[in-house]
Amino acid sequence: MQSSLLERGEAELREQGYTIFENAIETDLVASLVAAIRRIEAESDAAPRGNPSEGFATLRTYNLLAKDPVFQKMPVHDAVLPLVERALDVGCLLSGMTAIDIGPGEKPQPIHPDDLVMTVPRPHPP
Image (cartoon, rainbow, N blue to C red; front, top):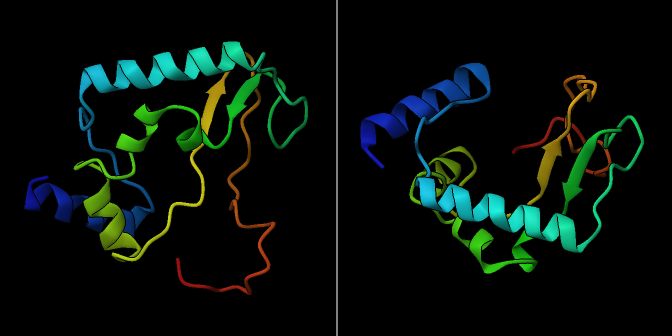
Protein backbone atom coordinates (compact mmCIF):
# COMPACT_ATOMS: atom_id res chain seq x y z
CA MET A 1 0.00 0.00 0.00
CA GLN A 2 1.26 3.49 -0.84
CA SER A 3 2.65 5.36 2.15
CA SER A 4 0.52 8.47 1.42
CA LEU A 5 -2.68 6.39 1.24
CA LEU A 6 -1.78 4.63 4.47
CA GLU A 7 -1.08 7.97 6.19
CA ARG A 8 -4.40 9.38 4.96
CA GLY A 9 -6.22 6.29 6.24
CA GLU A 10 -4.52 6.52 9.62
CA ALA A 11 -5.36 10.24 9.93
CA GLU A 12 -9.01 9.62 9.00
CA LEU A 13 -9.23 6.80 11.54
CA ARG A 14 -7.90 9.11 14.23
CA GLU A 15 -10.14 12.05 13.24
CA GLN A 16 -13.43 10.39 12.37
CA GLY A 17 -13.16 6.76 13.50
CA TYR A 18 -13.20 5.20 10.01
CA THR A 19 -11.62 5.38 6.61
CA ILE A 20 -12.54 4.12 3.16
CA PHE A 21 -10.08 2.74 0.63
CA GLU A 22 -11.94 2.48 -2.67
CA ASN A 23 -11.07 -0.50 -4.87
CA ALA A 24 -8.63 -1.78 -2.23
CA ILE A 25 -9.55 -5.44 -2.67
CA GLU A 26 -9.17 -7.18 -6.02
CA THR A 27 -12.46 -7.81 -7.84
CA ASP A 28 -11.82 -11.54 -8.21
CA LEU A 29 -11.08 -11.87 -4.47
CA VAL A 30 -14.32 -10.03 -3.63
CA ALA A 31 -16.23 -12.40 -5.93
CA SER A 32 -14.60 -15.42 -4.22
CA LEU A 33 -15.46 -14.09 -0.76
CA VAL A 34 -19.10 -13.44 -1.72
CA ALA A 35 -19.42 -16.87 -3.36
CA ALA A 36 -18.02 -18.56 -0.25
CA ILE A 37 -20.42 -16.64 2.01
CA ARG A 38 -23.42 -17.58 -0.17
CA ARG A 39 -22.34 -21.24 -0.21
CA ILE A 40 -21.86 -21.34 3.57
CA GLU A 41 -25.24 -19.64 4.12
CA ALA A 42 -26.93 -22.23 1.90
CA GLU A 43 -25.14 -25.21 3.45
CA SER A 44 -25.95 -24.07 6.98
CA ASP A 45 -29.58 -23.12 6.26
CA ALA A 46 -28.76 -19.66 7.61
CA ALA A 47 -31.75 -17.71 8.87
CA PRO A 48 -32.17 -14.37 10.62
CA ARG A 49 -31.77 -14.66 14.42
CA GLY A 50 -34.97 -12.67 14.97
CA ASN A 51 -33.84 -10.30 17.70
CA PRO A 52 -33.00 -6.57 17.87
CA SER A 53 -29.28 -7.21 18.32
CA GLU A 54 -28.70 -9.58 15.39
CA GLY A 55 -31.64 -8.56 13.23
CA PHE A 56 -34.89 -9.81 11.77
CA ALA A 57 -33.78 -9.82 8.10
CA THR A 58 -30.01 -10.24 8.49
CA LEU A 59 -27.97 -13.39 8.02
CA ARG A 60 -24.85 -13.70 10.16
CA THR A 61 -22.09 -16.22 9.62
CA TYR A 62 -19.52 -16.40 12.40
CA ASN A 63 -15.99 -17.84 12.47
CA LEU A 64 -15.38 -17.48 8.74
CA LEU A 65 -11.67 -18.28 9.04
CA ALA A 66 -12.58 -21.87 9.93
CA LYS A 67 -15.15 -22.24 7.14
CA ASP A 68 -13.18 -21.59 3.95
CA PRO A 69 -9.50 -20.88 3.21
CA VAL A 70 -10.41 -17.86 1.04
CA PHE A 71 -11.14 -15.86 4.21
CA GLN A 72 -7.57 -16.31 5.42
CA LYS A 73 -6.47 -13.85 2.73
CA MET A 74 -8.30 -10.89 4.28
CA PRO A 75 -6.57 -10.34 7.66
CA VAL A 76 -3.14 -10.31 6.00
CA HIS A 77 -4.14 -8.47 2.80
CA ASP A 78 -1.81 -5.64 1.79
CA ALA A 79 -4.74 -3.20 1.86
CA VAL A 80 -5.79 -4.28 5.36
CA LEU A 81 -2.91 -5.35 7.59
CA PRO A 82 -0.66 -2.25 7.40
CA LEU A 83 -3.46 0.04 8.60
CA VAL A 84 -4.58 -2.39 11.30
CA GLU A 85 -1.03 -2.64 12.60
CA ARG A 86 -0.74 1.16 12.72
CA ALA A 87 -4.05 1.52 14.53
CA LEU A 88 -3.58 -1.33 17.02
CA ASP A 89 0.02 -2.58 16.88
CA VAL A 90 2.05 -5.30 15.21
CA GLY A 91 1.02 -7.80 17.89
CA CYS A 92 -2.72 -7.39 17.25
CA LEU A 93 -4.97 -10.44 17.37
CA LEU A 94 -8.01 -11.18 15.21
CA SER A 95 -10.55 -12.79 17.50
CA GLY A 96 -13.27 -13.40 14.96
CA MET A 97 -14.40 -12.79 11.41
CA THR A 98 -18.11 -12.51 10.63
CA ALA A 99 -20.22 -12.00 7.52
CA ILE A 100 -23.22 -9.76 8.12
CA ASP A 101 -25.62 -10.04 5.19
CA ILE A 102 -28.23 -7.32 5.77
CA GLY A 103 -31.54 -8.17 4.14
CA PRO A 104 -34.23 -5.87 2.74
CA GLY A 105 -36.32 -4.06 5.34
CA GLU A 106 -33.84 -4.54 8.19
CA LYS A 107 -34.01 -1.83 10.83
CA PRO A 108 -30.73 0.02 11.42
CA GLN A 109 -28.90 -0.72 14.65
CA PRO A 110 -28.02 2.28 16.78
CA ILE A 111 -24.31 3.03 17.04
CA HIS A 112 -22.83 0.75 19.69
CA PRO A 113 -19.57 -0.89 20.74
CA ASP A 114 -19.23 -4.63 20.32
CA ASP A 115 -17.29 -4.85 23.57
CA LEU A 116 -20.39 -4.61 25.78
CA VAL A 117 -20.06 -8.28 26.72
CA MET A 118 -16.38 -7.93 27.64
CA THR A 119 -15.27 -7.56 31.23
CA VAL A 120 -12.44 -5.15 30.44
CA PRO A 121 -12.90 -1.89 32.38
CA ARG A 122 -13.38 1.30 30.36
CA PRO A 123 -11.62 3.22 29.08
CA HIS A 124 -9.25 0.68 27.63
CA PRO A 125 -6.72 0.68 24.81
CA PRO A 126 -7.90 -0.67 21.45
